Amino acid sequence: MTKYVPKEFKEGDWTCRAVMGIDECRILYDTINQYLNNEMIAKSIPEENRGYLEHVHRMLFSMIADYNYNKPSK
Image 1 (tube, rainbow, N blue to C red):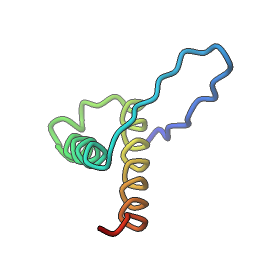
Image 2 (cartoon, one colour):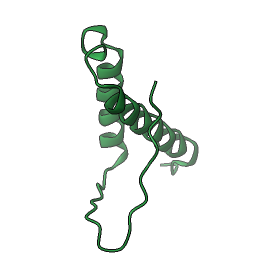
Image 3 (spheres, rainbow, N blue to C red):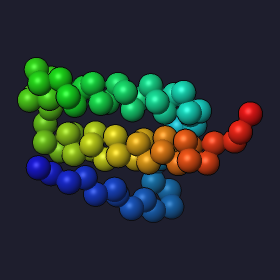
Image 4 (cartoon, rainbow, N blue to C red):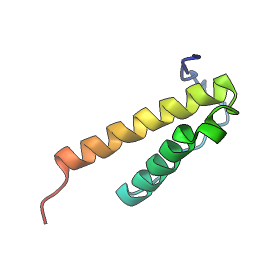
């Protein structure tokens, strides 16, 4: 399995950032989770793309766990 290694960006490189709330993070996490766990789809994902999806999946899990641990009380 190919492990994704995030790239280093230099000044002037094109980049983008997405701003999401916790609901959007959960939706994206669940969508990637379903995609990776669907055997019919998963077997056709190129190795490099799968490594990236697994990286994003782990990052989203970390964000959701951090939110759940630190979420403000209502």
